[in-house]
Amino acid sequence: MVCDLVAADDEVRASSIRSVAGAGLALLLLMCSGVSLVLQASEVDVFHAAMVVPAVLCLALSLLAYARISNGAWRVRRPTRASAAAP
Image (cartoon, rainbow, N blue to C red):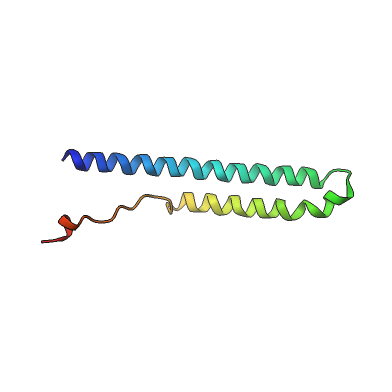
């Protein structure tokens, strides 16, 4: 009984930590995309072509990270115990 509660608590905590870390990663990539777009719009000619690729890449990666969080792909899945699987 107590072991099941501890296992459930561990699962909830691990899932929460992964969700927060993934959301932080998505926000960081989104911010990098914005910085790249601001640099691309500057007066320097080199930045006009060079900053488009990082902006698009960071935006795509942030959407991918958010999609993995929202569909629950980062949830903890514990393997079944050998004693519980055996009859």
